[in-house]
Amino acid sequence: MIGLLKLLGSALFTVIISVVLIALLTASTFLESVHGTEFAQKVFYQTRWFDGIFFLLCINIFCSTVLRFPFQKKHIGFLITHIAILVLLAGAFISKNYGTEGEMSLAEGETANAMQQMDLPTVTALPFSLTLKQFRKIDYPGTMSAAAFESDVTLRDLHSGSTFERTISMNHPLSYAGYKVFQSSYFMDEQHAKISVFSVAHNPGILWIYIGSVLACCGAMVQFYGFGALAGERHEEDVKSAG
Image (cartoon, rainbow, N blue to C red; front, side, top):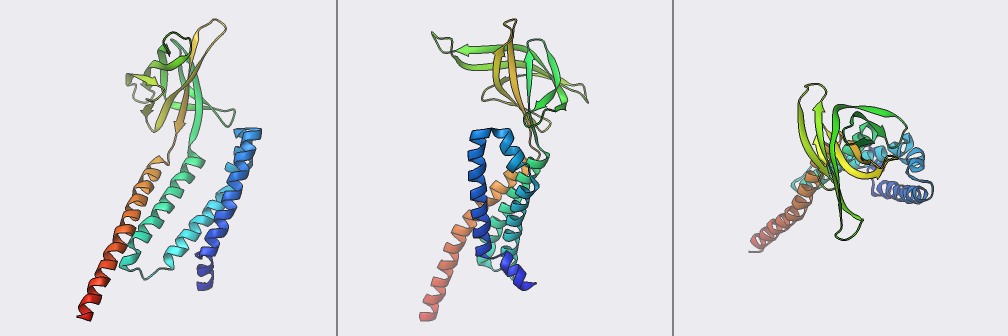
């Protein structure tokens, strides 16, 4: 058991997993550029074996942490950093497997409470509805090229019935009930009416990712300042012993 723990937590195992991940991500990026995002999602990102590689990475990080037991003061930064990586991976796994992304297209006066998923041809119901009140396209001066576009919408919560109005623009998405609605693009239909296109994303792992990011920063700070403090303490002890 100890031998297996040392193997799974070894630096060699870390290097092997890292090389495999780099090779797979390079291949998936190349194939995505050739065959499109849907192909890469189906062949790589949405497969169980791809999740399995990240699971092995989690095992590696966990075992390498356990091998440091009993923990000492100099391990604090190491522990926080490794916990942060595990939290980040957990957040990424939750978002990947339980998050959704889709699109919603509305003409002025239209209302919708569902989105078309981007990776699958399915319609997903939303806990709210959006009504497009007005769409605006702002052009560069003297041209017909769009500098920005924005939509005035009314959101209605389908459970409580409460409503409020917001403006969704390119850099100011609407956040509600764990969903984010982005102003994605627009187009003209056959009647020359402007259709506003929204990207809708539900990312349930985002809180884990935020927590992991904060922990990673804290771990790096403790690692840096902790080692400096320990070095100072050892130097003082050496001076006292020499005196």
